[in-house]
Image 1 (cartoon, rainbow, N blue to C red):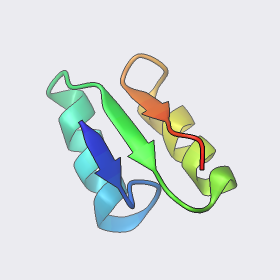
Image 2 (image 1 turned 90 degrees about the horizontal axis):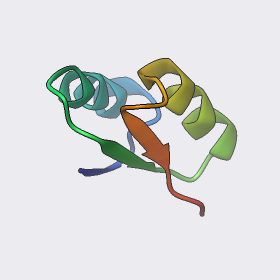
Image 3 (image 1 turned 30 degrees about the horizontal axis):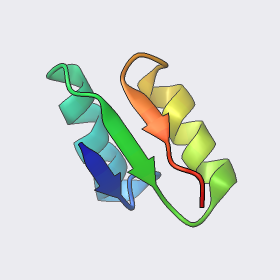
Length: 52
């Protein structure tokens, strides 16, 4: 799943839920530092960060 705005707020909450259900989530966002923190929070097996 590709999730825009997934590095904080509702987007991060949605990403957490999808990962909990077994999905691989690709986060897209403008702020690399926040995006990288979100990827670390979701865990290496559940998320990937798309370069911007």
